[in-house]
Length: 362
Image 1 (cartoon, one colour):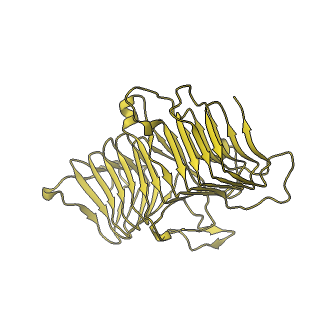
Image 2 (cartoon, one colour):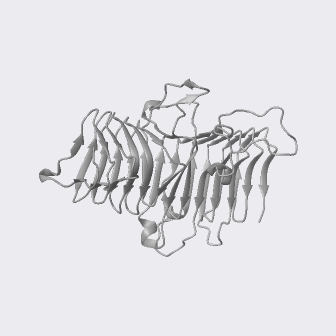
Image 3 (cartoon, one colour):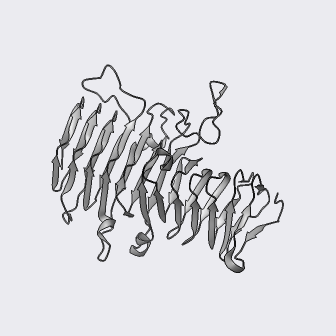
């Protein structure tokens, strides 16, 4: 327990050995100082370890690495801040609760296959690299992102305080904002890699970042759990995936301008609205929103029980390639596709009980 003006700094050691919080250990930051990882230090969290604060203290990785061991269940009941160029890595099959998180430009938030990350805040800000590449094959190799779970529902303990994989009582929605900053150099210091991931009530908002193709990702939400309030992040902007590009500069690689989504799904798990209203929207959540991208493809993906599956607009005159929307399935949606200016190739898509399958506008 760190009280008053006491502090703990993790620094580099000969051979760069890690400082490890052993099984069951608990660090309380209840004084006036933060926990610092600096000078090339490595702080490693073992199973059932925890860092907490009641004084708004921060786990600050200034120059070094914060690491969760494979298979460990760990809690950060404090804000975690990763400075420029540093690393926060969550090991294979670990289960980690993070109260709040900020990642600076050039820093990396890396999640390994089979891990489950639980966010305690409505918004996570990443100006660096988001790297979550799950494994092929069995579901246990997929990466799962969820917000916090409601421990008590209707006065009943759900017994799901730590590993709510697949649990229905998610009590918030979290938006992960991944954004390149002011200059082209800053833009190059941020990126997104997400494959074989499950985003449960967690959405991605990407602006001016490089993106690798999204492959075999599953986005799910529940339109009434939690209730939609005026300040709810998905009431204000109800898309599961938001992609925006506004910096077009010489020398930026093609992947900076390109959004590629394949074999993914976007689903409201609250199910079908019945009977359907023939003139008004029945659904709330929306799938993909793409603005000002110079190249986009969405193929072999599924959109279900949504207000709108896919919206694309603002494609610039310097479009790099036709926007491709191919072999997707839209089911039980108010609208399938809204497509704006630009050159498109829309073919072999299937719609089922979609009130407005496709709508074009300038």
